[in-house]
Length: 318
Image (cartoon, rainbow, N blue to C red; front, side, top):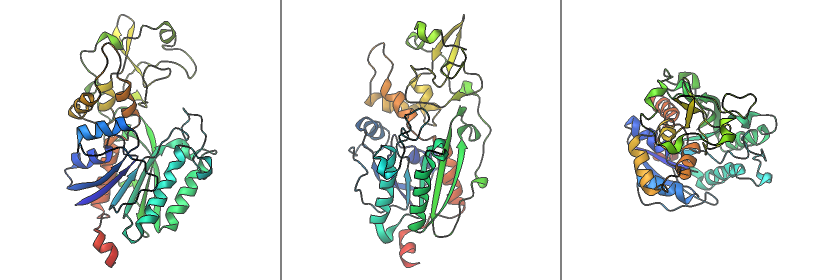
């Protein structure tokens, strides 16, 4: 049985990936400060967690997965940075280092970190390199790669950097991942969509097929990165509905494009019912902040194939 700890756990993409793979596992804990995300996670899985901060946390997992806040690394954000001294949301990634230090001899065999690829930019890479050095100091060998969800079957142009750190001197080979043909976008779009999603605001209509970065682009073969809001410009793409009209992606479509099932979405929606005639900002936000489940499936599958996961007793005795 794989024991995992989900830090900055969001709506539980790591756990969902293991469920999809049929892997026996135990989520020994889930840590998330956002109360609404905890509510969705509980509705989908355990119904027993309370929101907590990762600061000062101390647990003993086999595999640790964390996707620390990306806002201060992201191009779409203000790029405040992620070094410890920056004191930003993104600098919380170093709380993971503290947690592993507190674990001591019970270090997880594998630590997986996901974030925006802008951490490799000139301004942000010092924080990334700091993280890698700290992990090396704890006895880990780091491997990282920018992965696009489109290469794992999901029609979403979402590029994220994944860092896999393995205790010891073993590298993770991203070339061995099982890549999949991108699925048809029509599998993810709803057939009947309420009028509330139709774009009627003059300011947004004026930006359809415009020029520059702040434009609204119609969806063809795939959507662009699912973000925390769709009523914005740019967004993840707009869908043509005939007669020169367009609509936004629905909350359900965004969840599907992150690898979650309709059952997952329905359970989360029960925890966060929409106001009549309004979009559900909470469910948009949760999808945009998640990790694509299908990418995690590929990583977990390769870890299992390589027999990297080990029991804690072996770690102590080895």
